[in-house]
Length: 132
Length: 98
Image (cartoon, rainbow over all chains, first blue to last red; front, top):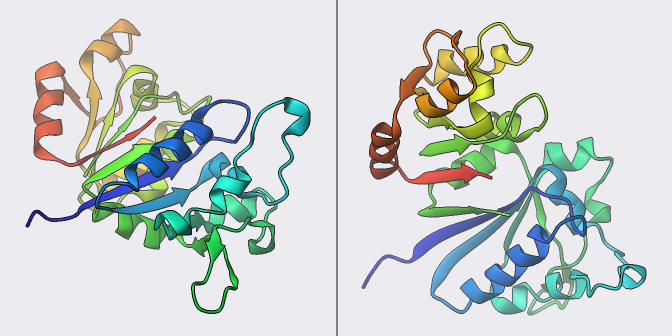
């Protein structure tokens, strides 16, 4: 059997000012249908996409916080945040939206805040890295 | 792994982020506006100079350097043409920092 492809998505752009974050999410959901080992890393302005309590109503666009809340249901649970990017933008773990709930405890799950070394090591293991 | 950066370091944080996540042994290719980082004697030169100490394989695409008239390139940065670019892509898994 062929080796399962390791695919990393990086999200480096702020949400709503451009279509990148939204399109990236669409691609992740499509890729989730395939047998791939998917990880997602939010860094730079991409961490703003994880701010909980986004309300895009007045912008007249759908927003994606609810979709992020279903990532674990799509079996995308390796969601990481670069600590330095997060802290340098005045955010903490408490600001992060929900990506699903634990199957057993039903506790809400959040993206995991990690250091640059962890991310660099993960990058080195990937077959493909896609930027959004 | 081959990292490519196509944004100016003077206007955009992409190169800084790329450098923060590079492993030793990784290769960097500067292209399009990214080659501006390869210019010697700028306020951003130290980024590449410092990288060269740990990661000696740093490339800049000659066509983009020439198009911008960049003659003074940081010593140690290797200039490559499109064929060399293709070779690098064939040899490494790639991470395009777009």
